[in-house]
Length: 88
Ligand SMILES: [Zn+2]
Ligand SMILES: [Zn+2]
Image (cartoon, rainbow, N blue to C red; front, side, top):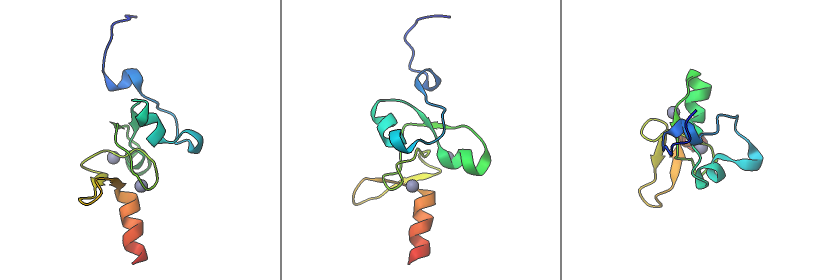
């Protein structure tokens, strides 16, 4: 085991399940990487991210499962995007 400083994501990641009391927005605010919850749920795969959805506060990977609103700059995961479309 080395005590070298490293910025590798897995060195400061929280692999635990989504926690309402300490949501992914809070974790990411503390510079902790979290799994993309959509990758986890939909594909059972682990993909770390430091981006979160501003609607559900869950981590989502940028590019595939998270988009930024042009107007507000806020992130929205594809799951929340779908829900909003369904409600129209
Ligand atoms: Zn993802
Ligand atoms: Zn969301």
